[in-house]
Image (cartoon, rainbow, N blue to C red):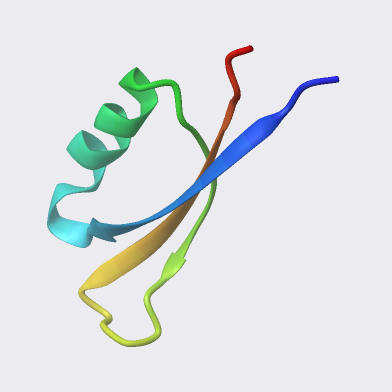
Amino acid sequence: MTQWEYLTAPVLVHNTKQILDNFGSDGWELVQIVPNPLNTENLVAYFKRAVSS
């Protein structure tokens, strides 16, 4: 069975592609991205990746 680890990270709206590309190159898969309720200039991204055994 695959084991997962999770990450929640802020994402700046003016630099979204580069930030998401950086997480992707580290093996993180984007699960969801939502507006930050405390700051509309940022988003909150939720990622997952398989845990290495």
